[in-house]
Every structure is written in C-alpha cells, then in structure tokens.
Image (tube, rainbow, N blue to C red; front, side):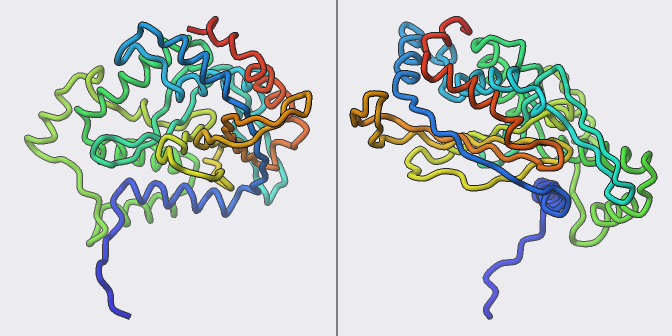
Length: 301
C-alpha cells in the first residue's frame, strides 16, 4: 500500500487517545436518546434576543446547557465520579455539589479542546454566555500545547502519588524522547508566555476534569441529518451527553394532529457500574417539563 502521509501524535491527540482508550477498556457504556420538540423553545430564545446584539445574544448552546443543568439538579447522581477496583470488587460513587461541565469547543484555527466551565449550576444564562465568551477570548492568547502539557504533567504526578510508577515512567519516555517527543516552549519564549497574566490566558484550571461532559455536536455541522449514536465517557465521570443539530421533522401533538416541528435529540451515555436507567428518569422528566413550557427559560436570563 502506498503511504501518502505519516503524522505523529501531538499532545492533544495523545490526550484524546489515552482518555478514550481508558474509557473503552474500563467503562461499560450504556445509553439512550431523548427527542425534544424545540419549536417553541427556539421561538422563546428568539424573543429573549430581541434588542440584543453581538455577544449579548443568548446562544442556543447556552440555553441548552442551562436546560441540561436543570436536569442535572433533578438527578444529581449523573454529576458524579466513580472509583472502582475490579480486583477487590470495591467501588464508590462520589456526587458533587458544583456542576463543572466539560465542554468540547473548536477554536478559530481548527484546534479542539475540552474546556471546564466551572460552577454552571449557579449561573444565569447571561453569566454562562459571559463565561464561555471569556474562555474563548483567553484562548486566543494561549499556547494550547503548553496548557495541555501542564494538565498532562499534573495527571502524571497524581498517578505517581498513587503508586503508578510504571505508568509514570512510560508516559515520561513517550512524551520526552525520540520523534514522538512533545514540543513545549523554552528559554525566552517560555518566559514571555508565562509572563502573560492567568486572567488573560487559559490555564490547566480551564481544561481540568469536570464533573460531567456535554458535547454540542450540532454546532459542528448544522446541516446534519441524524443523531449521535454513541460517545465516550471520560473516566471517572459517569455520564456524557451529546446535543444533536435541530432538524425539521413531522411530529404528532397530544391530539394526534401531524405538524412540522423542530426536533433536537439528546444522547445520554452512562457508566452502568454507577448508574441504572431508572436512576436517570428524573433527568428526562425535568427537561421534558422545560421543553413543554419553554417560557420558563425567561426566568433564567
């Protein structure tokens, strides 16, 4: 076979490869989909944005995050991490008060990174909008290789403290030797970069592990016709949620009348060691209430 290109993993691809490998090696994935009629929901967002311009407009992504936060509050178990030792058959699920959403984003240069949007459970939609916009602003001043290396190094040191010496040595060899070496800043360039105030650039705090992952896949391809079938759970998180693109489709109302509405599908994948389907029903019921009465989101501005 003729090879047209060989590209060694950069640190971003290394992190994704390591995370997804661990996910599928250790996590028993299960899941379901929830289809929302967002026709009226979109109309309410349009009303909210009347008179708003530019960055002040509430995006569909922000509104959907706020709805999902309502579902999480009704079903706290999904805002958890699991710690399980298969050899000893011992485990625990730790549920968090703060809702820190790991949110994959694509930057202007095409790079993708998962941001940790901290404490989204206590924010209005306007505050959510501002937090996301500020993260994107600081990303423009950031060297993504440096940020991701800081997180990778921090994870390696945590593994070392847990006695994972072999893993630590292998990671250091893999990142610091040969043609697979991760290139980071040095000398004057490093000094100048770290002289930038942390309020003006992303740090490991911005991309550290969140409590749950929410991916807006619909924002990547708005012409998408279909739904997300499966996605990775990021260990030790127990749930990952994907938002598909809104699509026009025939729908049936409570009186069996057929109409053209806008459907948006949420895909909810869960770690079956920590969560059973029945435990997730309060999440679905709460977001169902919101989509049936979307005027309520005006209270969250």
